[in-house]
Structures are given as structure tokens and as C-alpha cells.
Amino acid sequence: MGSHVAANPTIADRLVVVLSDIEMGAGGVLDDFPQSAFLGELILAYNRPPFRDLAVDLVFNGDTFDLLKTPLDGAYPRRVTEEIAVAKLHRVIEAHGDFFEALRQFLGHPEAERRVHFVVGNHDLELVFPQVRGVVAAQAGGQQVHFPGFAFDLGDLHVEHGAQVDPMFAVDTERPLMTHEGEQILALPWGSDALLEVAIPLQHVLYDLDRLKPRRQVFELLPEVRDFLMGKFWRYWTRDYWRELLSRNDPVKRVSWTLLKEVAYRFGTLDTSVAEGAEFRRMLTESDRYAVILLGHQHQPGWWSFGDRKLLHTGCFRDEFMMDAAGNVQRLIPKTYAEVYLRGDRVVRSHLVEVDGPIPPPGHAPRSVFDVLPRVRPLLETPSERAAIAAAHAEQEAKEAGGSDEPPPKSS
Image (cartoon, rainbow, N blue to C red):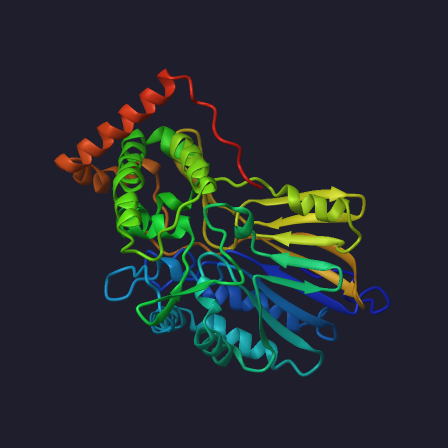
């Protein structure tokens, strides 16, 4: 993990370590990151040589906590108040004590400055609540824990989660809360609302499929699951969503042309990927403001360069698994994060770091993609699900017959 840069103070006087999409949940088989001790060991390695005498900033770039998928009393609240957010966070803390213990030890390092920063992501939007930030800071060790909001800047380094370039998960960063019945609640983005209504209540059935890659191959090998989900989302977008929107009973539901285009594209293709972000490339090519921009959200590491400037995607740190063409699960995908070295306000080196995670507990990955079918098939046998699937098929066939299979342009 070490680098000659850290050992030479004439080259760098600060290291910024950036991890994204850890997605710590409430423990158990539904938790996408059951390995707090492993992460704690990685964090504390930055208190040892060659980093011992170097200032280190640890940046958690969004979706550190999977509060979106953390239930309370068996339910997934959509009108999330500060009280609900704190209660969900405490469930995550209880399951990941090793992580917070490691942060306390990291910040207690006596040889050089240590700071920790939590950037807001779409799975931990609850970080906009002051009490949530207070609980995290107290658990992590206090004064050197910072909450920069939706982006973190240090010199000519820019870090943000990436959900703001995803039309399904972008929020108004100036107004992430709304008032409903006298209480402030999260102004959930469209994608989060749909997941809470349709997919997240099915975690107990589909949790391990969400961890498999390539995602498109999952649906090609399991047309029953594809049809089941398409039927669910079809019913949601064409009936439930509009009924609530028109009745004005649900403050979270809003609509725009951008939403309609993105829903049409993703519903028709089952493509959940996001464009890399032309605006970030423009930021690097048209201005000298930033030398390095770091993004997460996509769960796919990547590197784009313009001379000595870089756009880096840090991949994800949660558990994800690669399968072969026959659907057999082959291996745990290595976890990827970034190191950025600075001298003063200038980046002097940056790169991605790949590490192998520990073997996950039993039940966190199927041996084969087909192992999930016994859990799904009973859900497909109800008349309402058969009707929803038939409606989704009819809609898709009508679209194809009309020649309108060109997806709307994806926002970047």
C-alpha cells in the first residue's frame, strides 16, 4: 500500500484517502458490507510507516452508510424525519463498531494531523440532518470529523459522490429537506422513492442478486426475475406513482420531463448505469481550477485523463461478485479506492488502489445466479403479479411495434 511519495516530505506533505460506496447496513445477510474489522485494519495502516509522519485526510465519499436500505420495525419509511434517521443510524452503528473504533484510533494518532470527512451520498442522504452528523462525529471521535455536504474540496482536488449527475438520484443540494405536517423530512429523489416503494421491500428475496456482476447478464439468465421486477415497476410508475402525485397526498412525489425520460430509458432497457459525466470532463479541460476530480456512485473504477489532470472513479467498497457466462459466481471483486498526495494546495500524485477483501460470511453470495429462483417463483404465482407482468410485456411490445425503441438521451 505504501508509496515512495509519502516517505519524501519534499514531494508531498499531505495524503487524502478516498473511499466510496461502502454501504454499511444493519448487519445480517442483508448487509452489503459485513467486514468492519477489515476496513478498520486498512484505516489504521495509515497511522503506520510510511504514513506515520504525514498528514492524512480520510474522505468517505458518499454511501458510507446504507441508511436507504436500513429498516425500522420491519418497514422502510419514506417520510424520513430526523428522529427516524437517527434511529436507523444507531442500527448501523451497532453492527459496525469496529469501523468507529478504528476511526477513533486513527484520529488519536499523535505523530501527524488526522482528519475524517463524510460526503453525502444517495444512500446516506440522512447526513443532512444535524443530529445524524452529531451522532457520527461523537462515535468517530469528535472535533476532527467534518461534514462538507455534497462535495469536498482541498486545494485543486475535488471529491463528490456522483449522484448529482444521475437524474434518478440528484437532489436540490440547497433544499435537501421539506416540511410536511409540521416536520422536516428528507426530500427524497425519484430513484430513492421508487426503490423504497418497489425493490427494497424485496431485499429478503433479491439481496444477493444485487451484488452480482455483470448486472445485465443477471436479467438475461433470469428472465423470470426480469419480468417480475418489470411488472412491479410498471405498476408503480403507471398506477401508484401517478395516483399519489395527482391526489397530492404524498409530498415526496414530484415529476418533471427529466424524470419521465430517465424512467422510460431505464424501464425499457433495465440499464442502471450512469454516464461518466461530461460536466466533470469540462471542468478539467476548460479550467485550471482542479487537477483531480474523484467520483463514486457507479460501483465501477475508472480513469480519464487530460494531460496531467484526472477524473477518477473510485469503484465501490461494498461486497460485489463476478460471475461467469453460465451464471456461476466466481470470485469477490477487488475493492478499489484512491490515494491523492498534495504539497500545499497542489496535487502531486494520485492513483487508484486495489485490495482484496476477506471471504464474506456464508449466505452473502449465491453459488449460482439460479439459486434465487426458489425464492422468487412463489411471488410470481399470484394473479396480481401475473397481470402486472403481462401489462409490462404488452407495453414493451407496443413500444417496439411503434418503432420507438430509441432511448431518450441520458443526462450526464
